[in-house]
Image (cartoon, rainbow, N blue to C red; front, top):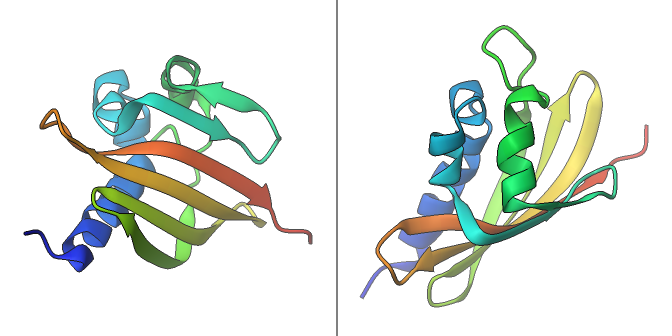
Length: 125
């Protein structure tokens, strides 16, 4: 039986990889971390599908080595059910903060932990 803290650590590692400009710039690397049923509700309120997100990631914030990078803080995780982890944390980018929530699931097909759902909510100034 897997230990719950290992599951949280796997989800946190995936979350941090998705903030890496090299991963954001690569459709294949980002695709390894997004679940086939992935959905995001961004800080703008826009709903994103997996395909829309994979197409847009290279041009979004933190999509290049030279640009700004997200600074995550206070990442916490909880195992909601076997193979399902909920992460919450805050990011800062160019003076803008957002509270974030992600659901990660360990797929039974052997592809490992993938982000199933993500939501970002802007923090007022």
